[in-house]
Length: 317
Image 1 (cartoon, rainbow, N blue to C red):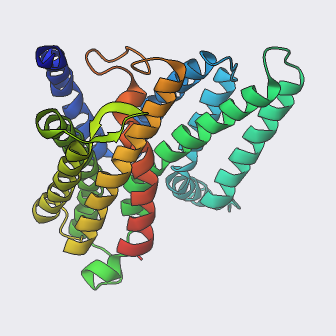
Image 2 (image 1 turned 30 degrees about the horizontal axis):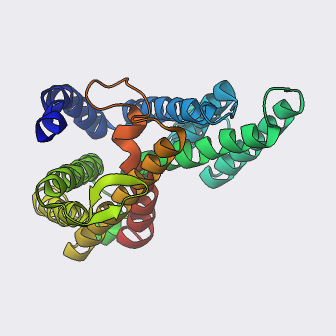
C-alpha cells in the first residue's frame, strides 16, 4: 500500500522540476507575464470544474464562463492598464475619464450575470437554474479568487505606500526596484508556503496519521497531517520574511503562514468534496502525476483572496 502511494512520486518530482522555475520566473517578472500565467491556470481550472459539474447533470455555459473568467482576471490588471492609457493619451493631449478598478469589476460581473441569464432563456438543455448557478459559481469561486493573486502582485508597483516603508515622499530607482522585487518574492513565498504545507501534511499524515480529519470528504487526511502542514506553513513564511520579505513584520509573516496553514487545507477539502460528489479522483489528468490544474491550485483558491485583503488592509495600509 505504501509503495503504491509513493509510486507516482518520481513523476510528480519531474513535473515540479520543470514547473516550479516557470512559476518563479513569471512571479518575479510580474506585469502581463504573471497575468497570463494566472489567466491560463484559472481558465483550465474553471474548465475542469465545469467538466465535473457536467457529471452531475449540469450544462454550464463553458465558453461564456471561461471568457467571462478571463475578463474578471483582467479586471485585476485594470489599474496598470489605466495608468498606461492615461500616459499614452496625455502625451497626445487627450484627457480620459475611466472607471475605477472596483467599478470596472462590478460592471464586468453584472454584464456576465445578465448574459448568463439571457442565454439560459434560449437554451433547452438541462435545468436552467442548475446551468446558470454552475456557470456563475465557477467564475465566482475560481476566476474571481484566482484574480486576487494578480492583485497581490499588482499592489507593489501600483499600491505600495512608499512613505510608510522608506520615509520619503517618492521612491527613487533603487527603492522602486526593491518594491518590485518584494512583489515577486511575496508571490513566490506564497507558493512555497502552500507547497511546503501540502508536502508536510502529506508525509506527516502518511507517517503519523491516526485520527481522521474529515473522513466523509477525504478519508486519507488526518489531524496529524494537518498539524504538520500548519506548522510547515508558519515556518516557511517566517523563513521567507527573514530571507526576502523584510517589509513584513514577524507577526505579519505568522498571520500569512497561518492563513495558508488553515485556509489552504480547507480549500483542498472543498475541492475533495466536489470530486467525491461527482465520483472522480482528480479534476483531470492534464498534469502527469498531479491530476488537474484545479487539483494543484485548490489551496490557492482560498488562500489568495484572504492574503490579498490582509496585505492590502493591514500590512500596506
